[in-house]
Image (cartoon, rainbow, N blue to C red; front, side):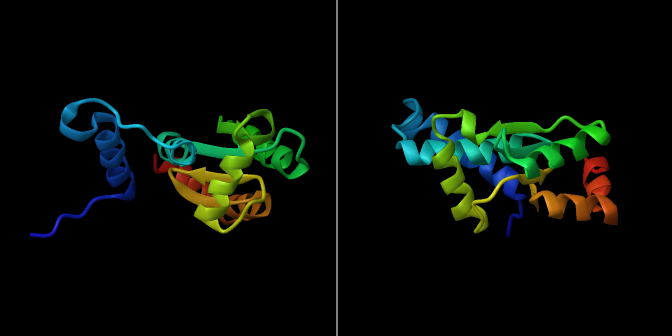
Length: 133
């Protein structure tokens, strides 16, 4: 018998196993690079709208305006305001093949940057994703 599960379910199981650790003795030591990667994945899979941004970026500001016009509140990670922002951006590069901001996720689906977000709004794709949650 073959079991099928979503990526979010698989990720939740992995996080649970990390937190429980071997033989239920508590969480194992996690290297800093892994914790940054875990943080990025947690942001993506735990928030309806996840938004990786830089506070001064004009494209990020435009994308934020799009969500404001839709009366949506994304979970925003401002990379330039965090000590680990460069590491987060490196994880995004490994994950997406892009290091630019903004990078937007809706229901754990990668939308892309500002132009991609605008195109998703114009095509109705964004509204479908938002109504699916």
